[in-house]
Image (cartoon, rainbow, N blue to C red; front, top):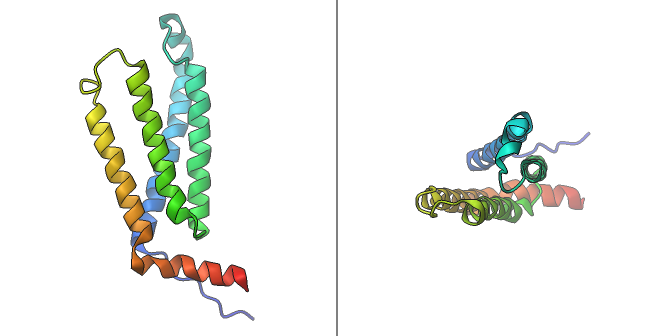
Length: 146
């Protein structure tokens, strides 16, 4: 009989987990909206093609839901990969606006989006890397090692 009781998830880790799930839900919603509005968007010649946007949104949704599943499983490498994943998604979002938008970056809300992603990456990094949160991931390392 095992007396192993997992540590309670710290609140900051729970917040990051909820944020990662929300990013995944956002991309699933983007897939649904783009697929439903594709017949309306096709005559306008939207760039990039809505099918490419759907493919990328599916990829991001899978990555975010996979990251949430790994974070929920207390995998220690998620302390680094979750902020990296959010940062890459931010670069993707900002890059799309820079490349394909006819409006200037500032008029397109680029600075607000950039600030949002910088803040989210920093908060997720701090939420997962605080010294008081390491025990949550350390116990999983010890349990897997036994």
